[in-house]
Length: 459
Ligand SMILES: NC(=O)CC[C@H](N)C(=O)O
Image (tube, rainbow, N blue to C red; front, side, top):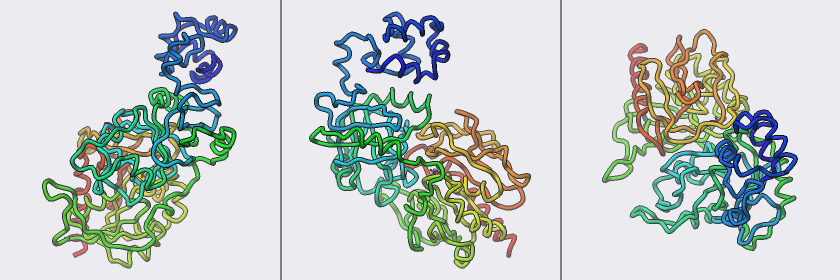
C-alpha cells in the first residue's frame, strides 16, 4: 500500500495531483490530513496513477490481500522471493525466477508483444533491467536462433505473469533455465502497469532487481546499491559489449524453410563498426549483397579505411552516445572526410550526429517496443518501427550540412538525419527489426544504392 504522500509525489506534487485527478486542492489537503483517500476519489486516482486498488491508502483490507506483491513495506509479504528496489527506496515485491542474483541498472520498459529473447540479447540493453508490459513472457521458451548476441546484455527482467512451460516447436530451453545459465535474475508478480506508469510520469529510475529463493533480503543494502549506481548518463558501455577482434560476417537473414543462409557472391565491401551490434543488422547487410568486416568500437579511421571499404556502417549499442563519442567521433570524422557512404543505426545514428557537430540528450523514458510510428520526410510515408533508445539527437543542434529525414509520430523527437554534402545518413530506430516489423528494410537497399552511386562516381 502507498501512503498519501507517495501518491501525491507520484502525481507531481499537490497542485498537479489536484489537476490530474480533477478534485481540487482542498480535497488534496483533506487526503493529507486523513492520511487516506476517500472511496469517491479512487477511480480518478487509479486512472491518473495507474496504481491498483490494493495500493490506495484506505482501500478495503480484502483488496489489499489480493495483491500482496505490490506492498511497498520493507518486510517481504508471504511467499515473496524477488523484489525490485528503486533508488528512491520504493520496493516492489514479487516472485523471483531465473538466476538467484541481484543486479543494478536503469529500469526501463518495453512494449513489444513478441521477441523477448531477441530483446534480452540486444547488446543495447547493457546496464538496463527490462520491464515487459506484454504479459506472455516465456511462453515460447528460448531457442538457439532468436539471439542478437551470444550472451544476453540485459541485467534482469520484470514481468507480471509467472513464466509458464514453453509451448513452441522451436523451443530448446525454458526461459527460466536459460536465464539461470547466464546468471540473469527475473521477478514476476509485479504490477508492471503501475511500474510503467511511474516510469512514464517520473522518468526511468535506477534500481536493483533481486531474486532469493529463501525470501531473505537485505533491503538496506539493496537500497544503498540502487542509490549508489551512477546511472546511464555519461556511461560508456559500448567498449564492454563490442567485439575485441575484427571478424567477417556472411550469415544472411532467416527465411522459411531453410533458416539462416550463407552469402553467395557479395558485391560491395562494408566495414561495420561494432558498438554492440545486433546480429540481424549484420545479416541484413549480408543479405543486401555486402561483404561485412566487423571491427571493434575503438577502431581508428586508419584501421577502418585500411580494409578498403566501399561503405562504412555504424552499429547500435548501449550507454550514453556522448561518452562513447570520445573515441568514436575522431574515427567517424576521419571516415566522413573520405566521402565514403556511411550508414548508422541507433547509437550509430547518434554518433554520426555527434561527429557532424550536433548534440544528444537523455530522453526521460525512452522508446522501447515494436510499434513506434515514424514519418520518413523524404517520401512522406509512415513506417511502424522497432525501437530501443534512451537518448536522442537534438535536431536544433544539427549543422547546416545535415538535415532531419525522419521524425517520431509519438513525440516528435528526431528519428533520422542525412548529411547534405556527402553520402551519410542514419536512423534512430531499428530497420533490421528482430523483434518487430520490417517496414524499414528499404534503408539497407538505400545504403547499397549509395555505395553503387559512389563506386560509379569513383570509377
Ligand atoms: N539501440 C541503441 O543503439 C541505443 C542507443 C543508446 N544507447 C540509447 O539508449 O539511446
